[in-house]
Image (cartoon, rainbow, N blue to C red; front, side, top):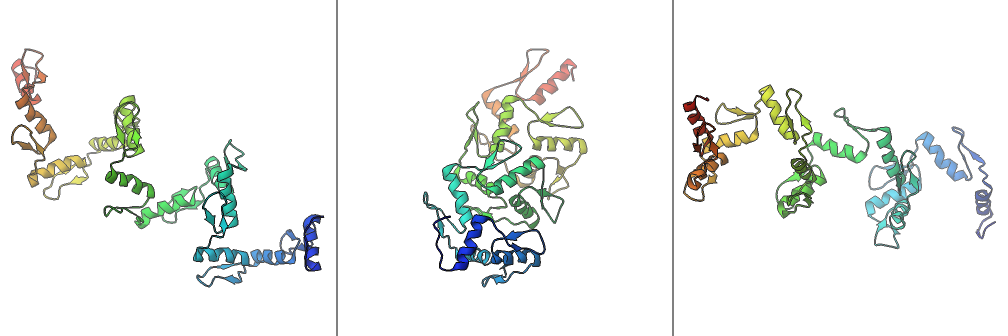
Length: 330
C-alpha cells in the first residue's frame, strides 16, 4: 500500500492500521479509540492524572515522554527545528510550522464571523473573543478580566507595583514595554507622530490625537454639570473640580491648596522666591509667565486693551478695568 519497510512484523501490523483506519484499543472511561496500545496507555493518564515523566531540573512532571523532552529544551535552550529560509530556530516542531507560514503567507485558520484569517490556531482563538466578548483571564485581586493572558499579566503589575522595563539612561522604570519605548523618546528627542495639517510632531500617538482636535475643534469630553466641553480628558477632570470644590494639590509649607498641579507649582515660588521668567531687555524676573508678558509691554509700548468709550488704551487689563470706572461701566 506504500513503500514503508519494517524490521519486525508487529511494526508492520501497527502501520497497516494507519491505512485501514482500524482502532482496536478502546478506552474504558470514554468513547476514544486508538490504533496502538501505547497511545491508549498515554490517553488513560488524562483520566487518572498520572504524570510519571518528571523533570530533573524543576518540579514539573508530564503524562507523556515527548512532553518532558520538549519541556527540557526550556532549560537547555536547545532549538533543533531550524527554518531553512531565515536564521530562526525553535524548540518545537509546531512552532517552526507556524513560523514557516510567515514566509509562505499561508493563513489556514479562518474566522467564521468576519473575513479575518490567521497563520496560528491560537491567534484565531484569541481573535474570536473580540466577537464573543469572552474574557476568561480574571484578576484575583479585583473584578477586572481580560481576553488575553498577556493583558492580565500587564494588569497584575498595577497590584504588585512591578516595573520590569528599566531605562538604560536614567533611573526610570515602567510596568509596560510600550511606556518604556515612549519614555526613551524623551532622551532621543524622537517625535515620529507628525501632524499632517501643521509642522507639529509628537513623541506619542495620544499626543498627536489630542493635538488634531485643535484643528478639528472637536471637544469630546463633556461636563455633566454645565455646557462646557473639552478636547482633553485631563482638562475636563480639572474643570469638574470647579463644581466639586476639590483642591487635592496641597502646599506643604502653608495651608493653601489648589485644584490644579500647575497652580500649586506657581504658588510654591512664593515660598522659594524662584523667578524663572526673565526679561531679555532688563534684569527683571518674575514668578509667572503672565507677569513677564505684561512687563515686556513696558519695553515694547504695546497697549492691547482698548477702551470702547474713548481713545484710551492700556498695557494691562487691570488698568483698563480701573479706567472704565471713569465712564461708570464698572
